[in-house]
Length: 468
Ligand code: ADP
Image (cartoon, rainbow, N blue to C red):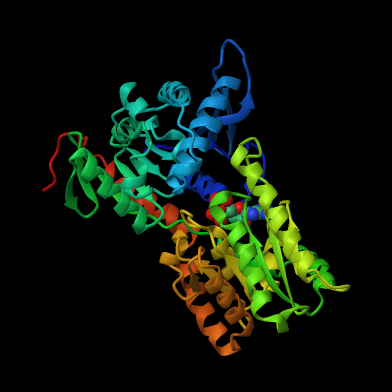
């Protein structure tokens, strides 16, 4: 079997411990094959005339990292990836900024990176490209002459065609995507959206079994629901660090029930609606005043994008307004912590929370939902309140599923979670935990690579071949 080559905008840091489910999973994928190559942006911005790649080796895995210039960082990363692709894929066309120069820069970076990566490939290699930063990388590798297998996994939603077509450059992106041999999505919902888009807008023929004939190629599509390292989260939740950090919060909230939200501060996460729902809960159930505390952890992200600054101001205003209406001498209803915490701390907090609130307006998967489940005490688990628009809802139907736009229904779901009998909590949790552990991150990686192997596997190139 040839080498595995992973291309992702950010890679794990060479020489440092690999933390977080995804970084560990990709690292394992490389080391299990006895080595391979991880290619991506170094995280550095430089203006050097000669901008080649930095090579380093760790445990038979080679890292090949390239810098971006300031202009590339602005156009490709902040501009097209974060201001056009991210909002459109999360159904926020209203927040998208379509700028031809940003797209030009995006294509140039994909071309430059494709050229650099092509120079490192050897016959027999399998390439696995990740995410919305590199939608055109497969095409650039083909243009450079690569004929071997290329798989792609999208870590954000693929929206309905009616939304994706708002991207002025969607035709060019579709052409680029068709150069991958295998396209993996997080959910059945996203896979169907992509297939429908290719059929309705590019005359693709749906050959069944996830195969599509489009632009004279046969490509494969499938859902690979991404998961977490459930065993690690369960371990963290009862670890010394996890428990001692949780007990710091415990001293403040005392015996009150904890309702917890953990998110990156992003407009896709439904944070204003969630705060409003908690306010509605207090309005409608005044007996809860003084007996429940909502902790929302949300470190700012992408502060250089204007929409994020507006969101932060809105959250400050909402939390302030609810707190000023309801706080008492010894109780503040909402504690809003705009910072990140170590994974052990989060796991300890998840375990302490009677209700885990995961209510994005739209989310590709949402790993926090799965982490919350994995961290629970099987004998006395909390209740997950989950948005129907999180990809995780396809697997976690035993949660209390809510419409994140329906403030009253969300408030009632929180109330139901706070008052749910233990027997029902345990039954729901067992079902959820079964789904989370069965579909963990290891399974995701193995399933994707098995599908990619099936594409490569020494078979003739797919171009122009009709399926049997
Ligand atoms: P997204 O990829 O959109 O941020 P996910 O829920 O899929 O959303 O993944 C978020 C990851 O980031 C989870 O593993 C979660 O534990 C972590 N995370 C989210 N918020 C925080 C925080 N405040 N501090 C530390 N880690 C966080």
